[in-house]
Image (cartoon, rainbow, N blue to C red; front, side):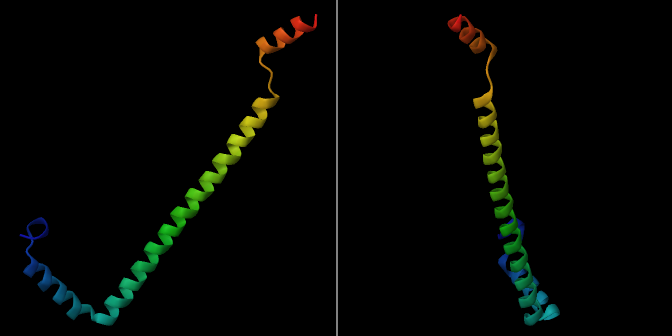
Length: 84
């Protein structure tokens, strides 16, 4: 038994029919096109991940900067009591 109940001989016969129908040159160009599409997809995914990472880092920096300038009410009350 092969993959999913299909034997090796059945797979070879199907492969032979495909080669006869399309020819090796056409199959080679289809394989090249498919490889190029996969390569383009992978680079797009990497670019998207890198962009998301830089956006996340810049958002974290903005939040940290805004938190540094923020005064909590209890801190303000403590500071005013110490000064008085």
